[in-house]
Amino acid sequence: MDMYLTTEDFREMMRVMYTDQQPYTLGEYEGIPLASEVCEIMDELRSFEVRADDCWIVTYPKAGTTWVQEIMSAVMHDGNLEEVNKSHSMLRVPYFEQTFPEELPTTHRIADEMPSPRVIKSHLPGQLLPPQIWTKKAKIVYVIRNPKDLMVSFFHFEQMLNLKGAGLSFEEYLGYRNSKKASYGSWWDHYLYFWKRRHQPNVLVLRFEDLKRDLRGNVEIISQFLGKALSAKTLDDITEHCSFINMKNNPMTNPDSLLAADEIPGRSFMRKGKSGNWKTHFTVAQNESMDALIKEKLHGTGLTFDH
Ligand code: PPS
Image (cartoon, rainbow, N blue to C red; front, top):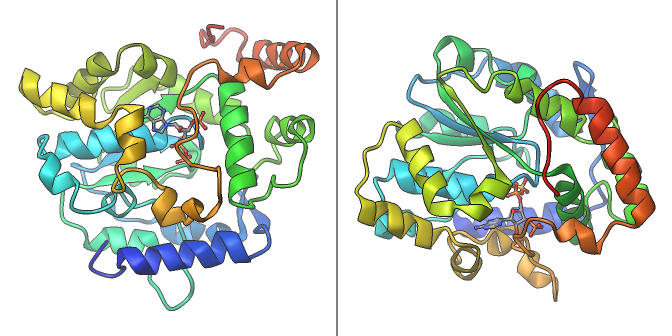
């Protein structure tokens, strides 16, 4: 990605897009609300040339994308962290549907030029990903996070970057994000698409809470899934590299610098990095209503969340 876009370009563009502009407008593609610019390129994205050795990190936003993409990138570099730290995670791992101002190529065109094996990030719901992912059997790591923590993380993120949900109270935000009108559609449809496919050999479904409980074990699971036989020492090093505090302190893994979020005092993309942070945000009534929604939407699917 550096071939086309320098870190400085990227940062300046993000500053303009997020800090100076009004919240983006949402369009709709096949019933899924997406940023209007993304809707415009969706037909092109659907015909993207997938490679069999691509590794995709797919998530509903705020489920642990940045964390797992960094683990995947480090694994695909065989744990060579010196090499990994030469460029920012967001440049190493292209965000598939990210659009840029007109004079720059869109991310998927940049990804076209990247050498194999590629790690590619997307938040698109499964049914909108390029169909070649399934025919070529590219590997997909999908991360699920307790939707209550997802709400809190997303709420703060949208405030921080002045996105669609900025300006809403937490109560109003819950109403928006728990509806099919939210950007990227509903979290439950997004989760269930992959949950139902979790036994397919090219799909690995992980849980944010499991990564918190046992990061080393999950680094090993990811490495095996990606076909890498890494030494215990290398797995230890990747685990260390991907701890919350190390990712927050590392300018090549903390998105703040590229999102120009470090210009906003007291705010950080790497906010808390915890499971159960929702407990300090939800009222009793909000918690009950969220429990009822989770029960209604996930009933009979086998997907549940610990408290
Ligand atoms: S995005 O914008 O969709 O790419 O966001 P995403 O990366 O999916 O989610 C951001 C949340 O993940 C937390 N995070 C981590 N937690 C623990 N350990 C590590 N290493 C880590 N890296 C990122 C990040 O802090 C956001 O969660 P919250 O709850 O807001 O802190």
